[in-house]
Image (cartoon, rainbow, N blue to C red; front, side, top):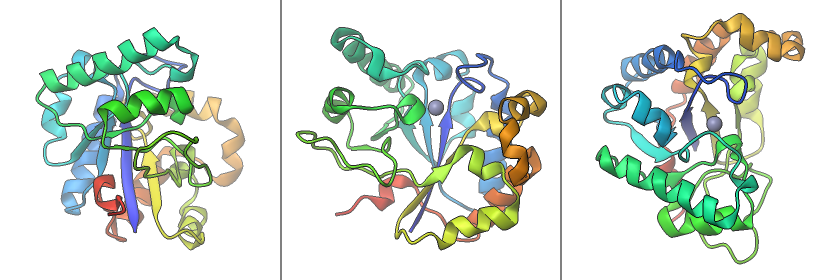
Length: 224
Ligand SMILES: [Zn+2]
């Protein structure tokens, strides 16, 4: 099974804190609708609060939570951590969104973070496919396979990710990679990726390639 997910957040954190990626979000949802494809969008609640118009773009897709602000949750004190997650939950509820899944900013979690997450969410999608849940944490996990930078490499290379011997593959990307933000700023930070043919046009090409494989929302990947 192939799962498709997007982390809806400020532009290219922690390097920028703008909202130009809203344009990229529009581009993504347009492509998904054209292909009648499904996906899960993990939203930073603070970002939603600043850009409430994105709700219209996201109608019909599964919405999850990408915490409140785009900060590393493992660095917070127990009190700050609980407050950060609770505020995110309340904010999404205020907008009438039913977020069952959670993905941590930078996919950075530990036992402490996941224990708090398990109190508020039905599943987590912060671990990478080769990681396992810490002992004592009980929450269904839909782990990440690859994405982000990888979605911007030359298509011949990207296609090979499908050959990887993993049954369930969860891909992810970000709105700011698809538009709005000056891509040369992103490419400059990811200079080493040039050797893999890294550029913006590839994001669209690789996404359209994935859509032909009929990806599903992450909720549909939960093992029953
Ligand atoms: Zn993120």
